[in-house]
Amino acid sequence: MEDLSLHILDIAENSIRAGATFIEIDLAEDVEKDLLQITVKDNGAGMDPELVEKATDPFVTSRTTRRVGLGLPLLKQAAEETGGELRISSEPGKGTEVVATFKESHIDRRPLGDMAATLAALITGNPDMDVAYRSRLREQEVEIDTRSIRRALDGAMGVNDPAVIRLIRDLFEKREG
Ligand SMILES: Nc1ncnc2c1ncn2[C@@H]1O[C@H](COP(=O)(O)OP(=O)(O)OP(=O)(O)O)[C@@H](O)[C@H]1O
Ligand SMILES: [Mg+2]
Image 1: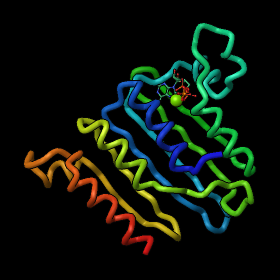
Image 2 (image 1 turned 90 degrees about the vertical axis):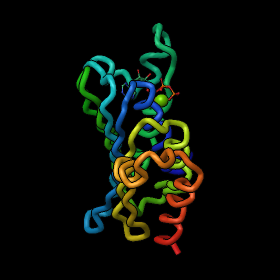
Image 3 (image 1 turned 120 degrees about the vertical axis):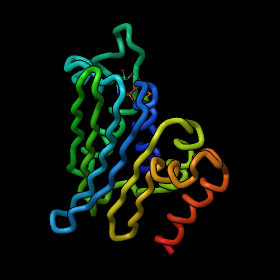
């Protein structure tokens, strides 16, 4: 029962554990269809079809050698509670795409929460990895790409410098205010 931004952090942490050097996070809504769609895409190790199948079901895997994971099952549950769904496409050696859809106005749809904090945590903890974030929502339109920030900084400071993190926070606050 968490804010969506915390689910997104969980899913992105899977990407990091899979060795991703680039994570794309995209939030979009279809107002007419009352849908909110969250996409987290990475260039990490990927999963074979069998693992994809198991990854969203903690009960199937809890008695195998793999430790019980909850990140994907909890996001799946959060999506399905609203009448939405979770889809995973993955290719070993290429990467993974996780798409969660939510009925936006459903009473059980969690709020987005502090997306700036999620991005700050991802970038601070993984300064060599690139993150491209894009949200196009009524309440928030933000685009942040550490690749262009990195280019602009030209080595003067890391993308995890407190000044950069403050700038990212400001970007969100301006749009929300
Ligand atoms: N982006 C990804 N790339 C490669 N493998 C992934 C990815 N996301 C999930 N997996 C695989 O699916 C498993 C289940 O993920 P899930 O987030 O549900 O649990 P976990 O990460 O193992 O544990 P927890 O999230 O509770 O700390 C992972 O252990 C990993 O093997
Ligand atoms: Mg996880």
